[in-house]
Length: 254
Length: 215
Image 1 (cartoon, rainbow over the protein chains, first blue to last red):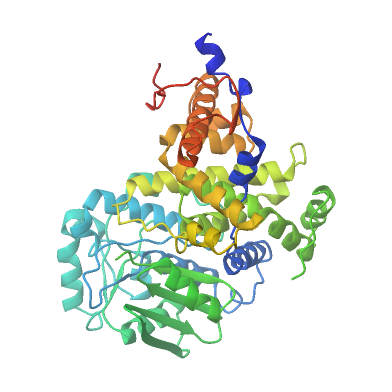
Image 2 (image 1 turned 180 degrees about the vertical axis):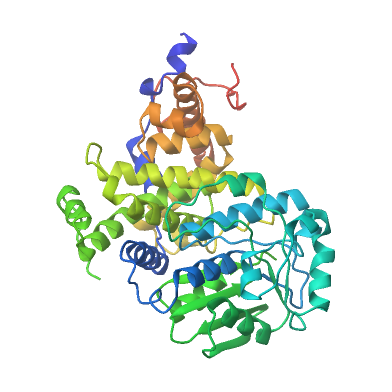
């Protein structure tokens, strides 16, 4: 028998029951299913109620923020993972952060990033003065300067691959520089939410612990947008599903 | 939401393109299970697959106006899901690796279920799915992706070649060998040692597991 025969997929088919099992993803998480459908429908009809109170620019910042926020809490958190993307913008942010993280390595990653958030903090930074490997020092300098006590925003150069990626629509403004907000407290999280939205509206924040997992979340009232930061994606979903239709989320790998 | 199985995609898709939000929601909801299956079989992680499916659905919606009905809408959705999953895998490979926890829920105790006389068709199907998932996850990635893109996403050979960046001949080879390995692994796990899971001339004996390698 020839190798050609063995390499012919038409001659080598799986049993129908096996194919059916492969195509059956049961059990399906109905919350995730509804979330995905709503997010997609909201994308189609831009008048989704959570988008209305936000300007397009603020939405970009919020989504980017949600994609790359790092929480520096009680544990040794030094990794970022942002599995949920509710818009193309968030995905671009994730990619660029991943690229940057790969370049920097885990040690530097928690301190280097940055830029779109510099808008929200009204910080002028000269990227040329901030080589990537000095971003940690830049963050420290900023913290000592005009920033709130424990919220630091730093800028770093964007990797070429991320910078070269075109935006897909007018609303998805290219994230030429990416944000990193290091947040130590719940109050800082609320402050970051207010700054990101460019509003003085009340930002409710809370912090709680369920079991061994601590999580922090902020609810921006009046916008139906929720920024959730937690140490795993499941917690993000569990909290977010209770709170809003469209979820901006970031999770921190343990 | 009451779900009705779509008999035809064409009318609701055209209605969605014309601006019918309810039709769009219905179409997307109907497309979700298979799109999720594609992502799950590629990523082997339910949480990541759910996120990937959501991202794929947003892409589908953004491209909806450009869908020209030359291909089946479901096929197009599967293709978008597959390419989104491949993108996720590439991003994952560039990202510093955290421990990936397979979110498949608690391990069912099949023996206890049998002893208690609780074996039902549903349980048996779930058992088959679990064993199949394990067998698929154990395959060399290149072979597993080719099989999933063909048998779950139902892409044609040229589409798979384009998605994976390899020649059509390589795709065919990977699919054939991947199916053979999957069937063998599935049957071995079942303790049958035979070949009830595949149709065709399955070579007995060890299978070369090197991706793309020649026997």
